[in-house]
Length: 215
Image (cartoon, rainbow, N blue to C red; front, side, top):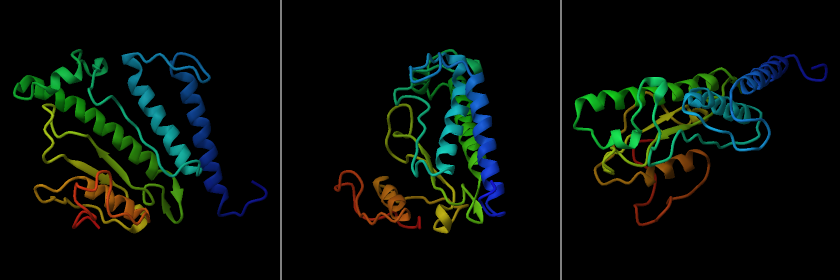
């Protein structure tokens, strides 16, 4: 602290405080033992583990350990239930019953929980000061899934983008991509926002160039 300028001291103090809070949180969460051993993941522990993953990712971004990170709450097949929400049937089975109003209510409840975890990530990023703004201002967060519905449809897959990407991306918008536009073009746009000058992402046959209207 004695070797840095007055402007940098609050940022360092904020970072050290966040690391200490993370340390206490990790110690308090039952993860099946310390060290590098794979934790035992019990269903009731998932909410706490999710918050710890968010804190670890934000800490890594904040101190420059990495520029890119990801969180995956479950496998694509979704073989998980949600006892903390009062839902005991596995997500995969529920997702194939979208014509059942009672099941839809459970799916809404599950997806609301996922949305809450994304919101927590955004709050953590917003709480970190960086370059006359926040870490959220200088980040770009993509939230999405590989399919549109539980019946494995791939049309009109929704994606949500958060953050300003350092001022390069305008928020508060809905971009309705033309029918037949592959999401690869959105990924090209994201690469371009990060100064990666590509024109294709993945298989080049799925159209070339960025997504019109995004940037």
